[in-house]
Length: 175
Image (cartoon, rainbow, N blue to C red; front, side, top):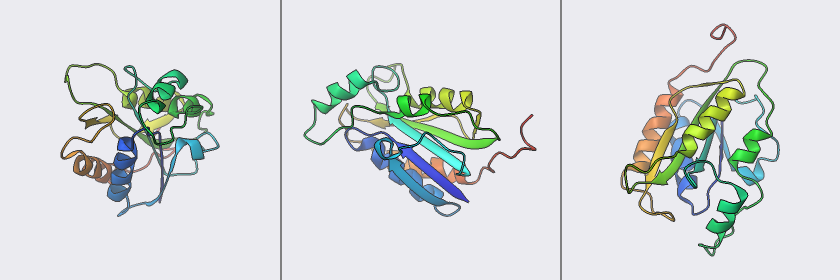
């Protein structure tokens, strides 16, 4: 079976989580992964499992303005023109049941801080006709630019292993 991971990352934290998810999926899936800037086409239902992730910006998915702001806080190149929001908004609905999962990164402190890119991704994936294999998952960073909180890499690998144990959606499973 094939899993495709598409992610958006400004400071490398979401990319690290995507890598950890790939590790957790590899026992069961052939995994390909790419940053959203390289995912030229909108999601196509060729993968048995589509996993999509992004950082939380301004309580949800990034926009061009928040990506531009992030670019000003790092010397690393940051893709400003396209993020997961735009990529999913350009996608066509899936014609047959497909399985997906959503993840995101967000600041750990204060713990009551609202918002989640993962939840926004999950909502968009369901709207496109995907069945979510698990509830959208947030992985925590210490500060806006990172690093990841202790244990989050391991938690992401374990979350992915649980995804790998979930059977992909088939026509018989969906009404």
